[in-house]
Image 1 (cartoon, rainbow, N blue to C red):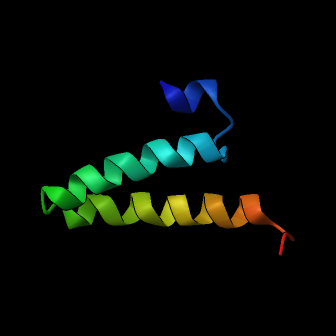
Image 2 (cartoon, rainbow, N blue to C red):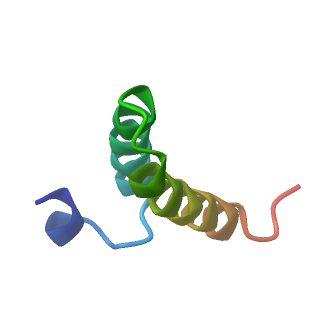
Image 3 (cartoon, one colour):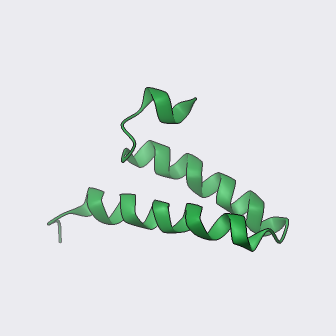
Length: 52
């Protein structure tokens, strides 16, 4: 639902993905957590852009 209301690369959406990934990690579902964390990383890198 949050993905539909926010821009897919929005930092707030990344926080939601991160929370889901952490839940998966806590349940040792690493194969599900990894792609989520990679997406979080990509969103965060994009949001930082040229900032120092």
